[in-house]
Image 1 (cartoon, rainbow, N blue to C red):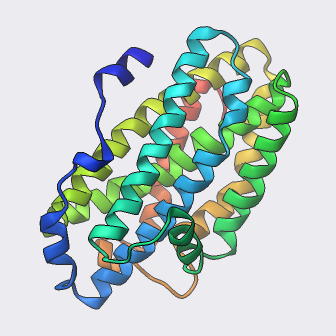
Image 2 (image 1 turned 90 degrees about the vertical axis):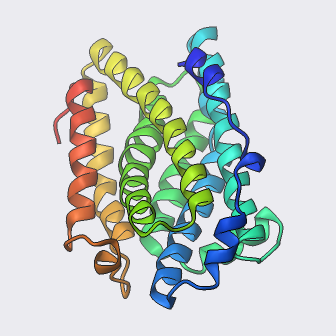
Length: 261
């Protein structure tokens, strides 16, 4: 995974966004609302996961694992920089990353906060203060790699990238987001590997994975279908299809890990 990271380098500042800036003002209001909501969710998610990750680096089992985990932290910061650049140059709303995140939070609801501000932050604090705690590490990886990246992230990238390509819109954003999605596949591969090994060593860890997912999946489903916003028609999908796709992706990884919901 580390060597794959070395071969897959890209820079947030090198993605061309001039065509996106020309198209943005001509979008239909419904299209712009969908994209603004998605961008808000992505911006806040990257801020959370880039600032709530150092504890996992501290909990590395050896230098090989630590080398890869360090690359993931760099990836998350790069993703945040790309979304901020898109806001500055395409949405034409220049601001600091902190200001972008603060405004983006106004678009998001309680289920999002439950996952990113409560569950993720709490798991990170527990791991940061006790890096040798195996259950704390399993819990953090379950939230971060299985739920955030392996379920919510997979759903968003699959449907949003498909929509942009079908509409032939925002080619720069589609390129950058495609590169981000490729980075996250590498992250998810790490999480699947780690949890498989942890469950094989101690079957009790499997119940910890299962319990945490069952606790947070209802909130995850609500973030995909936020109250008062029905994006299904704009995305060209049936109600419930987003959650069904995400659950299918999650279950495939859980089968590899050795856990059943």
